[in-house]
Image (cartoon, rainbow, N blue to C red; front, side, top):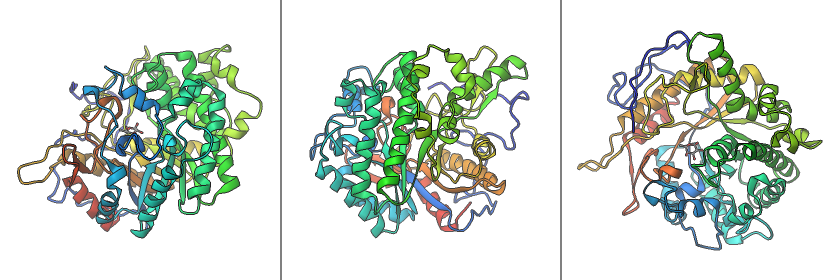
Length: 473
Ligand code: FCB
């Protein structure tokens, strides 16, 4: 991991607080809190998030089919150390213990994802009841412990059979997704108050189809933006299926990145604006306004596969009203005149993450300013740290405490500024399979000893329990 030397901003990005480093940072008191006394509104929801492929394991059990992440991670050279999600955190077998951990932390909300290939092994046809039963047990266990389930329908584990039939380049896959969503709504709709459709469509587009370091491992810019359209269509069709079958609320889960000009030049301002189109508006606008951003369409050109893939009525489907928007915030981008991204803040163990808590404030206030007062939930925010089990049996992840505290303080400022933020979820509840980074990056509040599958609450978990109990910092 490289740690670029942080340098102060040179005028491009106003910043209210100093950046916090991944480790160290401003001094913390014994319990990790500053004596700020920041209280969140009554009823604010405190949660944590996971996803199916990253924690469940049990890759071949109870009728589960293959997903593109099984294929990708088992392909030599694709993941660090050749790691796969075959066992992961073995949550499929240990979910009761994990539910008890959530109760011990005092969580109000648990965001998890449903594995499409557990429900339909090949992505089509009759449901696999054993797969649905697992999620039923999980959801019932959450209710028994007073925790609200928040279920994501798609967190990247596309059934391999659908990839073989064209994957998200195929419009038909959006319709298969709607069928799958309907099955899940019918099975669990009475017990799940909040549904999220597609997790981070942008990551599928960028990592899966532009850069190729995520499944399905393509480097095909033309395909990438058609994939974006079909992911949006899948979202819209799932919203329609939800309205027809279920109660509760539904919305998309988008990872948003504030895009700042790297310097004061007009060229950098222009480049940052276009980058904002590709990072944020390409995803927000079709869903929330029913239009693709014109600057992105122009940049892709009139003959792009995206432009060619939009059929009459698609944007009406895609922009069907949603009940809430889930925002995932990890890092800002500083964009230079030549459109390259320049580092500005300390980089975390994840080479793509610049630690900038004010970006949380900026992105939340921007969404409310530009898209109106739609209810917001933060469904992911977190930091990987090189955690280890100490001889005394504890895990001292002071850097994660600093990171979470600073980001929560920024979220609190956004709430004070009028942002209708109703809940916040740490990524992640447990250490887990971090995609191409395998098990090298630990993102959990809870340490997982992968040899024994023992769970140990990290310092950050104890700290978060206090935050929840106090409803603030
Ligand atoms: C997000 C993903 C999540 C996890 C975090 C670190 O992009 O949604 O699964 O990998 O990053």
